[in-house]
Length: 377
Image (spheres, rainbow, N blue to C red):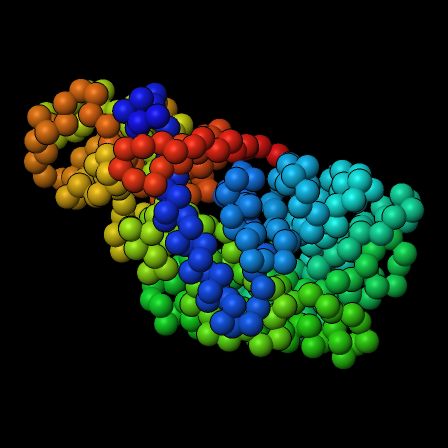
């Protein structure tokens, strides 16, 4: 199959770039002496995850129980569900564990620990759990030094329905860094926060076998992993414009793009219209907060090469509007009706979630495979 045979919009995955991105992260973390637990929330495809697990112990990170089900059905058993557990999901987690999945949950409160333990006791089972640590004020978790940490740990350790496995954190604020030095500093902040909390648990006589950190920016630029047992990262497989905007990758590293067709022109407005609106690209505007606003995506030719300063400046459900980033004249005659273009996404997770399959390429024109992916919860 050729790219010209595809109906648009279609999600393309450059296998060469994917494999290069996987190898780079694997080599970096190997040098730091720590293992990788890939986050599969972006991939949502066993074909991708199988490549990401090559050379790794075999554990994955998920953000939905649908992901846990899918990868467990493909014989991946070591699973960390890295979103604070809601009580209404515990029956599902218990069922997965009963069928052989070694699934661990996370939480960050005494109330959450009590609910987990109580449910485990009622089901005559045991839920392994990590305590989430807030290393950067970005989202959720227990702040380092908070006495609640030991209280939560004791609840998980002392009751029959739960088991304390350790601590984890996610430096989500790394996405707001504006330099590589800032990302390196954030990586060290992430590490020291979670290692300190592991020490607090140990001093209280509580177990802490897992010390888990992770974000693609901090995993990429970390210089020390002392005291850490595993790293979680996911978007490093594909990268995107947000990652490029903070210096974690270049445009040439971005493995995902959306194939789109030119369907019209508005010459008086210097617009080229395509059949890829927000349903194909997503509404994510993550680069709007960065020094260079990439609109809804960077426009490339069929070979994946960016075209001058063209971006998708606006979208409706099924229409994309291509124009110059800062205005300016566009020669619409260069893009006749039916011209195929590729759009690099702002956020790989959000864009991939709009599609049910990857069209895998390793060059400019040939589709070598179609890999299914899934969405939802």
